[in-house]
Image 1 (cartoon, rainbow, N blue to C red):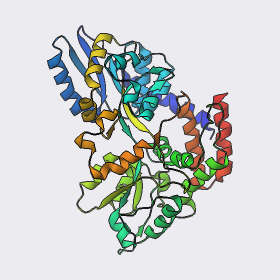
Image 2 (image 1 turned 135 degrees about the horizontal axis):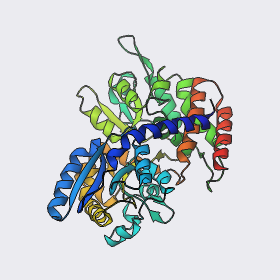
Image 3 (image 1 turned 30 degrees about the horizontal axis):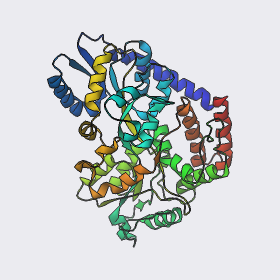
Image 4 (image 1 turned 90 degrees about the horizontal axis):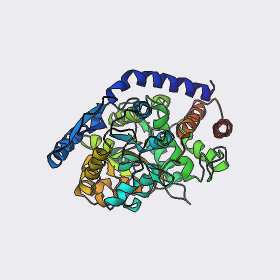
Length: 421
C-alpha cells in the first residue's frame, strides 16, 4: 500500500472522528472565565490547581475541560482552526511543530521573560521541542525519555549480575541471548521485547527504534532538514540492529509485530520478557508488584558512541484565538513555577530547577534522569509525523521480512524526499 495515500486516508478518518467530538472544546467563555483543556490523567491535579488559582484570583473562574488521550492531537488541531479554542491547553511537545503551521499559537517567550524564566531555565531538548524558530509556543512542564527496565531475578537465573547491566551494543546482544531460555514451566522467556506495532503503532515504534539509528550516527534527515538520509550506511545498520532482535537473534517474542507499550508491560509482568524500553510511569507500576524485582538501565550504545533517546513530553499552549488572553497569561504565570511544574508532571519536570525536588531524587530514578540528559528533540518541521509514518511502515516490512533493511530504507528515503519536495 502506498504510505502517502494510507496516511491521507488515516488523517481524513481521524479528522472526521475528531470533528464529531471536538465541539466540547468550543463553548464560548463567559466574562471572567478561563477555559483550560487537560487530559483525563491530569484531572486530579488540574482540579486542585484550579481551586488554588481561583482562591488567589477572586475575579477569575476556571472552566476545566477534560479530554481522553485518544486522537487528542487531531482534536486540538481542529480546535485551533475553529477560531474558538480553549484559552490554555496541554499538548505533547511533539505535536507543536504541526500546530505552528496554523499560526494560531501565542509566542510565550515574552511572558517567560517577564516571570524570570529564560529558555535556559528548561531542559534544552524540551524547550527546543516547544519552539519554532525564535518563538516559544509552549511552556514545557513534562520531559521523559525511554530507558530499559529489566527483571533482576531473570538476570540472576541466567547467571548474570543484575547490578552490572549491559552498557554497549555487543553486551546487550550477549545479555539478551542468555536471557532467552525456557522457564521451569517449559514456556519460553525472551530476553528483550521490542515494539513492532500495537494500538499506538507509529508512536510506539518511533520512540523505541529511532534512537538506535541516532546512536549509530544515522538520522531521518540531514542536518539542514532538506534531504532524507535513512538509507545511509549508519541509518541502515541502526535499523538492522533493532530489527535483528526479532528477525535473526529471536530474543524478542513472536508477538513483536503486535506489541506496543502496554503489551510489552503486560509481557514483562507475566515474566515472558526480561527487558523492554519504558518510562518512569511504567517503573512505578511494576515496582508496586512485590513479586517483581525491577531494575533500570540507560539504553546501551555502540562502543564508540553514547546513548540517546527521543524526547517525549508535554507543554502548556495558549491559542491566539482564546477569548481570555489576559486570564490565560495569569494562569500560565501560576503554573510556571518550580513547585507547580514539579507537581503537575507525571514523569520528570522540564524545568531544571524542579529536578532537585524530593520526588525526583530517588536513586532508582537516576538511570531515567541520565537518559533524559542524553535525549534529543524531534526536528521542528510540520511534516515530521508523515515522515515517521513512512519510517514506521518500512521498518515493519523489515520485521516481517518483506524487504532487507537497505531496500526498506531506500524506499523510505525516496518517499520522505517526495514529502520534502
